[in-house]
Amino acid sequence: MFKKILVANRGEIAIRVMRACRELGILSVAVFSEADRNSLHVLLADEAYPIGPAPSNESYLNIEKIIEVCKLSGAEAIHPGYGFLSESPAFAQALEDAGITFIGPTVENIKSMGDKLASRELMKAAGVPTVPGSKGSIESLEEAQQAAESIGYPVMIKASAGGGGKGIRVAHNPEELPEAFRACKSEGLNFFKDDRVFIERFIQNPKHIEVQVFGDTHGNVVHLFERECSVQRRHQKLIEESPSISVPDEVRQKMGEVAVTAARSIKYVGAGTIEFIFDNLTKEFFFMEMNTRLQVEHPVTELVTGIDLVQEQIFVAAGRKLSFSQDQIQQKGHAIELRICAEDPADFTPSPGKIRRCRLPAGPFVRIDGYAYPGYEVPIYYDPMIIKLIVWGHDRQECIRRAQRALAEFMVTGIKSNIVLHKNILVHPEFLDGSYTTQFIDREIAGKQQSQLFMFVEEDVFLIAAAITAFTDSKLRSTSEFKLASRWGKAGRMKAMRT
Image 1 (tube, one colour):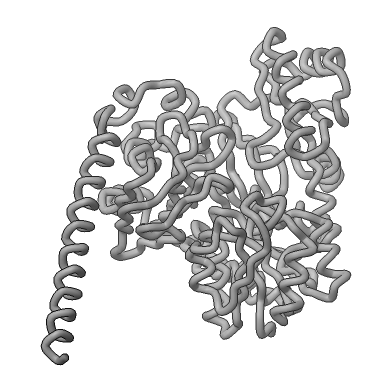
Image 2 (image 1 turned 30 degrees about the vertical axis):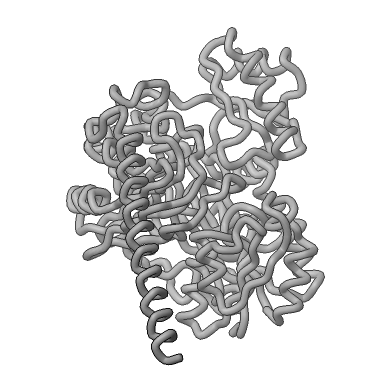
C-alpha cells in the first residue's frame, strides 16, 4: 500500500480524497494556487505545496510542476480528483514515465473514451446501443444540413472533444441549425482545441442516467447501479439521485449489464461512469459517453451501496483485486445530492466573494462534502460549486423530506448561493413525481424573474440579508475592538502600578 499520495486538485474533492487517505493511514499532499492559499484542503493536508498563479493553466493544469512537487514530497501516487487533469492522457502518461502511480484508468482507457466520435464507434462495435447520428465528424454546414434532414429534427450538435456542458447545441428546425453548428465548432476550438462536431437525434423526453462501473487489473468489472442526473443547468448537473424513479427494474438490470459490457470491451481499470440518454416515454436508453474518472456525484452511489469508492480506487491502483463481486453489491434506500454553488440562483452567474456566515446542516443520514467556512474568499477562477449536500432515506419520500429539512438549516451569507433554488426544486410537482427531464431547468427556471421563481424568497431578500449581515458584523467588530482596548488599557495600568 502507498505511504503518501499527492492530490492534484482543490476544494471539496481534494478533501474527500484526503479523508480516504487518512482512514487508510496514508499521508496526503496538497497542492495549491496563489488563490487557494487559505483553502480548506490546504489546511487539512499533511503537507501542502504552492504550484503557481491563480489561473488553472498555470497551476492545476501544470503537469511538470505537479510531478516536481510529487517527487519533492516523496509521494508514490497521485489522485487527480475530477476535472483538471483527471482525464488527461498526457498527464497519465507523464506519471507513468516518471514512475509515479496514477490513481485512475490506463492511458489507453482515457484515450479511447476521450474522443466522443471514437468512443461511439467502439461502443457500437461492442454491441452497446448508441443514439442514431452522423457517420463521423461533420465538416461543413451543408453536410450538417444533410445529416440533420436524414436523422430528422430536432437534432443535437456535439463537439467531439467536448465535456462539462461545453460544445453542445440543439437545433429544433433547419433555421436554428446554422447558428448551433457554428457555436459548437467555435466552443470545441476555444475550449478543447478541436473543432470537430457530430450530430445525433435529440431525444424528445430525455433523462440523463449514468451507471457507475469499476474494474481492476485482474479482469474483474462490476457496476454499482445507476444515478439520475437530469436536473441540469447549461448541461451541467445540479441534483443527482439514486435509484432513478423513472427506470423500471428490468431496464435497470439491462442498463447495468450494458455498462459492464462497455467497460469490459476496453479492459477498463478503476472508477468510471457510463452515461446514457434515456427516453422517459419509450424507456429506451442510448450510450452518450464514458467519464474515465471519479464523478462529482459519487457520494450518491456510496450512500446506497455502502462502498467507499475512493478507497477502492486506491486499492485497485495498488494492484489489488476488487474487494466486492457483482452479487455482493446491493442498492439500499435512496440518496440525493444537491450541488451548492456560489452563483445567482436566477441566472446562474458566478458570485465570488467572502463568505461571512456559513451554517452547515447536520443530523441523521446527512453528509456534507465541502470546503466553505466563514471568512473564506471564494475565488472567481474555478468552478462555483463550494459544497455538496448528500442525504439518505429508506425511500425517496423520506429522502426528499430529509433534504428539505437539511436545506432549512443551511445558511451561507456574503455571497449569493443556489440554496433557495434547491428548496424550490424539491417541492416542484415534476420533481416530486419524478417526471422531470433534462429540459426542466430551462423550461421552469431560466429567463424568469425571482418573484416568479421562488416561493421561499421575495425579490429583494438578498439585499436584506446582506444588509443584516453587514450590520451584525459592524456591531461585532466594534464590540471586539472595545474589549481588546479595555484589556490593553487594564494591562497598561497594571504595568504602571508595578513600576
